[in-house]
Image 1 (cartoon, rainbow, N blue to C red):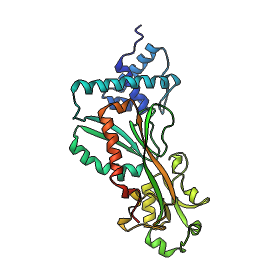
Image 2: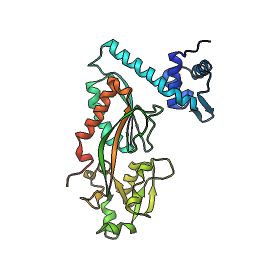
Image 3: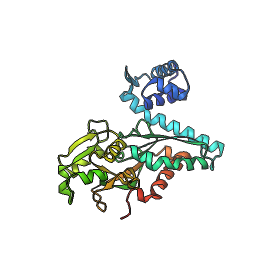
Image 4: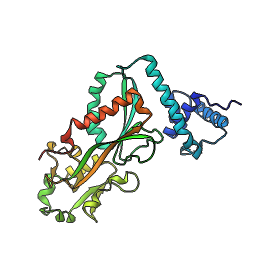
Length: 302
């Protein structure tokens, strides 16, 4: 038996590891799910290990599968880099880049700039995963990650992207109809909107309790945009970043306009091997430029 796995089998292995099911992997690769299953079986037979724990809910990596991931990814990156070099496309950016971001950052900061990016590089496609739970770089669920929780281990390039200030907001009607808020201690008697803290969102979003030890939550959601909408309707107080609050719309006002109450650091991270490839380098720079060119989204003018 040939003990050297075929690249096509490794490519299928990476797709299943990243997507979690053979059907999703088959759809992404453009092959039948039965073919995906056969190639995984062949790869396991070749390597004489079990790579996946097969469950009704999907495929999860075994220890052997986790150990194979970095080696398969090195082969993948080397192949992509070789293709770029052989085609001599130094000035032509082409291909898919999957980016993971916090929900509102992806929607309000990153997505608006993609149209201009596509005009310059029509061959480049961004796949944006904007969600409250940070996706995984380890399994390449995403290839570039914007996060409050940067990886501390592994071969990743990590850089600070921005400092995020959280301000307290409410609707004008809420402010008029409720007890006055003259100082921070006054907010304890008010209703709050917050995240659901049941594991469906990152623990990095547990910021309200730093402000009020025992807040009275009248509404919770895993979506910060839903929290904003509820606050704009007059439901209660909410902690938001300026790019989410967007006070220019007039439906929210800052309770303490000149006083950020909580501060977090936002990071960008990507596997070192991918950043040798031009399209990932380009998208990394694009994300940083989007942040640097719009400081008002993070720190509103006094």
